[in-house]
Each structure stands twice: as structure tokens, then as C-alpha cells.
Length: 435
Ligand SMILES: [Zn+2]
Image (cartoon, rainbow, N blue to C red; front, side, top):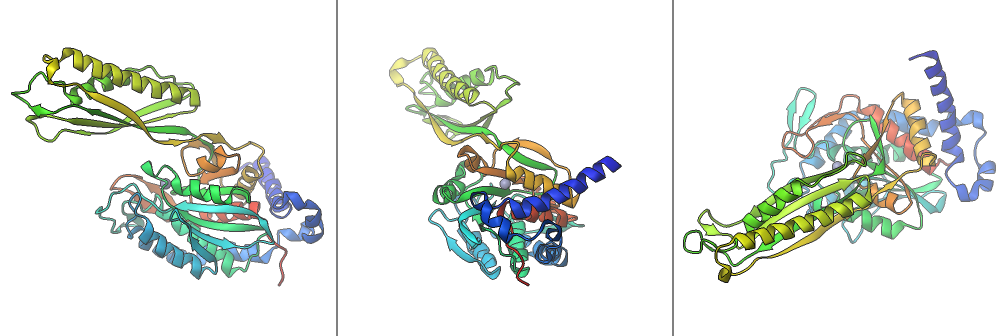
């Protein structure tokens, strides 16, 4: 590290304490100036230091909670068992905990100013279907299991941070909500975060989402996406005796090839994925149905709309091609539809937001560097509604997310936990010490 960098970090550290104690309640800054300790003493807040030190002393417990939670299956739309276990953990951290109607676990730590709240969240669900073997295997320092990193890491960090704040008896300025939410992955379509933000919108000043491992990024730009399903239906029949009848799979293939050849821009970055295809019942039957699920993403809402329209045009043309080439029109016709399964709205955190400043200050304190990222996460929902939000990793290292080979290595997770805690306290603010 150069001298200049070291000095700029030192400046950032001082800035952090300024932010930590001066930022939280913008609407009542006048009160703050009388309530907050003088600047010189802020760096010596014993409670914050105690909370930071809690992690290193309890790494074994944190790793254990991660393994235990990961071994409770949480397939899409079936998170209730893991939610119940998480509720216990938050209750043990001294929080008032509720399950909301969506299935989210919400633990509340009241601040001096209860009219304003910040949220620290981690999603409960995994992409893995019921029946997946989620038992932990060990390989050196690595833990292996589907979901161990995404989002076992985020959940363990959420529980640990709640616990550290409780043990250090920190009273925040703004209320802190610790939320383990449902429905982040796939067709969950962010339903847990949507319900939570709907309910708390008026009080919510910032959202920090813990998702997966690492400390190398901060997602501040919410990538917009749409998930679509194509369904084509026909009469269906025998492969030999009904030959010539229009075939839904043929039509789907014809339409899909057209769609794959659609030109997409590199700027704004735009992607599509034909992710799941099904249909037919046996090799010697003309199928009565074919289905295809498509995910489209773009930095531009206009491109998303254009790609969705292109998919409809291509499928329509594929069906027309199949009908025109069928030898016997009397044997029935095909019907098709393209349905929107889900849509994740886009948004972007302002470069001068207090939340980003808090994250940068926390990075400086733990001596971390992170890059801005664009991604589709739970943070999409608050960001799309004008609420400051980021998504970050919760420390350690992981890989193979969404695969059966997923792994997590907790080595060095302490730094990620401190980074998240400091960012949280940076936006919640901390009440002056009583001790
Ligand atoms: Zn995740």
C-alpha cells in the first residue's frame, strides 16, 4: 500500500465515524448535534468495538449455524421449515421476531427514532428442488453442499450480526430490521422482498442485502429482467398413423431457432437464455404440448421490451411455419401463448448516497477494496422504488452457486462480517454509549 493510499484510508476512517454518528436521522439533524458525542471520542465507541470483536471469538458458532441452516431444505416456495429455525436464532439474539404473511422472518431492534428503519436481509430459499441431498461434506477447510454459500453464508452472517449487536448492547438511532426473506430465487420473483418493502416502505431508509460469499463487490445497479414461458398446444396423436398433424415440439423448435438468431446489442448489455424445455409423453406420440422458459436481461428496459416482442413474433412465426408445412390441415391446429412468469424491475443507487458512503467507509476500515456491480438481487425491489439499497457478499469464499458442487470456505469470513456490520451501523447510526 502506498503512503497516499494509506493516508486516504485514514481520512476515510475518520469520515466513517463522522458518517456513523452524524448521518442517521437526516430529518432530525438538529437533535443529533446535541445528542452525539464529540467527534474525537467517536472512534473509541467501546460497544461498536465489542461487536466487531465478537465475530472472531465466535467463528465456530457462526460456521455451525451455516451448516445447520443449509441442511434444512428450502426449495422454492417451501422455505417454512428453515424460516422457523431462523426465527429461533433471531429470538435468541434478543429481537422481537415475527413471521409476515409472505413467510419472511422479521426481527426488530428498536432505534431511538422508530419512525425510520434500515434493513439487513438474506434470502432463505435455494434453487434446489425438494429431495436434493443437502447434507454437508467436508474437504479441508471447505464445506460442500447445495446452497451452502448461496445463501447459507448470508443467513449465517445475518444471525451473527444480530447476535454481535445484541451482545454489545448497541442501541441504534434508526430501527434495524433483520429479515430472512422468501422467494428470491427463480420463479419466487422476489416476492418476499416485494411484500416486505410494501409493508415498510414509509419507514425504510436503506436496505443491505447479504447474498453469498466474498467481499470483492457491491451491487448498486439492479439489472432488469423478465422470465417468460411459451406454451404451444395441439391435438396430439400417433407418430405413424397421424403423421402430418402439426406438432407442438416442431413449432417450438422452429420458433426457438428464429429467436436464437435475433440480433441483440452488446451495449446496452443484453442477454437471453432458453433455460428449460419440456413436452411430449413418448417417442412414438405426436405431443399435445410443448413448453419453453426463457430469461431475458438487459441494462435497458427498452431492449427488454424489444426482446419480449421478438420472442412472441418468433413463436408466432414458428407455429405458422409448422401449420403451413403440415400435410393434413384437417387434423387440427396449434394454439400458442407467451406468458410473463416474472419481472424484476431495474434501478440504480445514486453515487452520492449515504449508503454507498457507509459501505466505502467500512471498506476503508477493514482494508478492503470492492468494485461496483450490476446484478439481479433482492436489492432490485427497494432500488426500483427509490429506496437506497445494495447487495454484498458476507465474507469468506464460495463457488459453484446453483450447482450440486457448491462450496464455501469460511477462511477470512471475519472481515466480511465486520464490513457488513459497519455498513449497517453506518446507516442506522448508533446511540451514544450509556456505560
Ligand atoms: Zn442468492
